[in-house]
Image 1: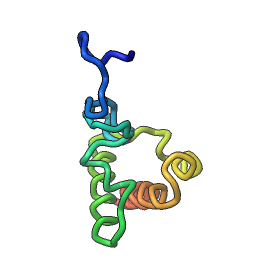
Image 2: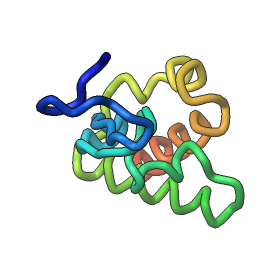
Image 3: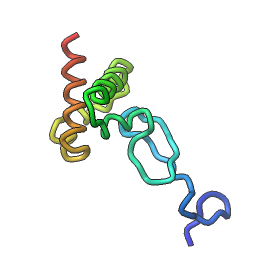
Image 4: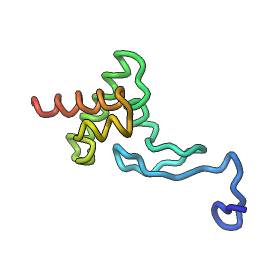
Length: 99
């Protein structure tokens, strides 16, 4: 039996802690994920408003210097986040270089 915490058996509702691949914050979820709630829109956008929200989130991370340098590689992003996630990341990076 796998234990989670001190003498606590792992059940389906146990929280899993992870580090967000975009902002680096530690977050807890009941399923294994790679992004926190704030950065989730980067990978799950469905409309133009969500796209702009994702670009703004990434732009804020770029300005704060929190965006990992490997995320600037388009092929890496496509392989790990799909074409939609890579599109948002590349657009945010391009937008931050213009200013």
